[in-house]
Image 1 (tube, rainbow, N blue to C red):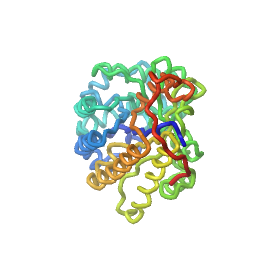
Image 2 (cartoon, one colour):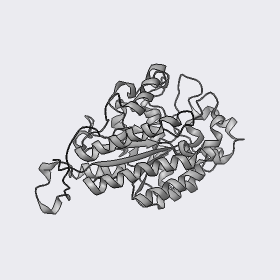
Image 3 (cartoon, rainbow, N blue to C red):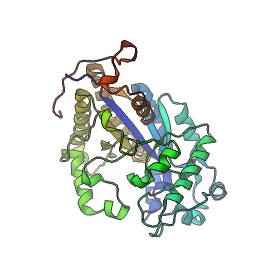
Length: 352
């Protein structure tokens, strides 16, 4: 029997073209980025339908109005990456002629803000890479300051951060605490997911093993108890459990296996009273939108079954942080009826 409730956490990396400028041919993703305007309202509608809360890590640039607006609002220190092309500031000239809808989406941020249960977090101001050679702590802090500034313009107080390329740098923990960004999405514990520079993370061995883990679960269930979230730096490491890969026509025959794998992880979290953290990019649903939404709904129908049977709940990253701050996840701190959570009987077991 387990006295803790399982928790479903969802986070999305909202970046548009800003997250792809360092790829060899970013405009190859044009159709999926254009599809974001179609996909986000649909995703939000599904979230409302199933009572799902989520954190949206938003690149600060996309809340600006134009490249000129970005140029007039530069951080005091720019990242000096050794690898050419990583800095979006070097692309400003070329982006002047780019379709604004590929770069800016303040109107979509407004829609997200108005949807119940949705948290606006940051994906840094400039899609900042915290582990690439050449960048510094000062540049990172200046980037965060601008992210907070543009969010404040929309009356948003940032508390959660999703790092581009999942590059969490523990040396920057003090900067995060200074700016009250105490919740972050860390990586799964397996070595294939560890934080590292882009070149290393894209190695063929890592990519193959991550793909296999999506279908076969060779590295475990990637769930964890709330009590394991607080890291040694005093931050809340709300680790990823699974990237929701977009539908692939080439791998369509494996889709049932992939969805069963995710449902199995969710079931394990619900039965054992642990956290399951699912994430993706809105552009992942910009193409094959209907098929991807069908897959999302299938997963959320399973969540509702787990909610009914085991009391599983949906929280965004900010709400997880609040839960931890209030110490509600620790049984020893729930000694009185006034602060005790509703309990649901469940059977802890192996991953289904």
